[in-house]
Image 1 (cartoon, rainbow, N blue to C red):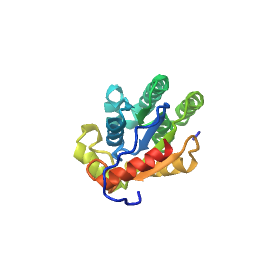
Image 2: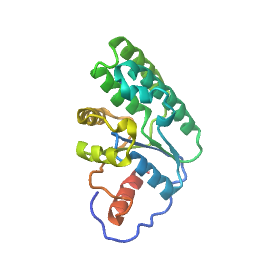
Image 3: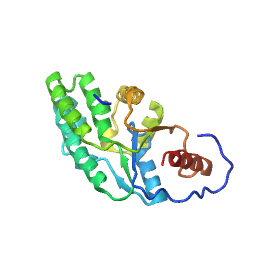
Length: 221
């Protein structure tokens, strides 16, 4: 399968992002801070966000109750709708930012379910072939922003946001996903990667962190 130095404390006033269309992707584990970063970038630059279709997945609640029975169906749904979403963002005339990519669905979440024997070998082969065909037809991001955090940080944030379906996610599950993210990004070659460790990163309220994050992102854009 395919695979912040401290700065002087002053307001950051770089010009607007280039008028040429850009595709910014934000990747990371559950609770890493993707949605917050996407919202922040959209407010800062007036970008159009594309969010993961969690709320529309009819299998998701059942998946969290019985992963083995609904894993394959849920992943096929995500793959189908992420493909449609990717095609939509490709047609947008301006710069877009996406909260979790189609690549993560396959390389992280579906692969983890296969390794845990929640998707059997036959279904995994079908899924993998479909993903390979789809991924070859897609325009890759101009930059992939990888948000990483330790498991204890992820668990704290998941608890704070209080989503019922995520409440009982095991620590071992989050650790396996972290490991898969590290493995995937060691092989990822589709676009430049900016890695941000978000355990102690506060770009929403801390001016220094905000300046550092914006400088790093604009270096690529």
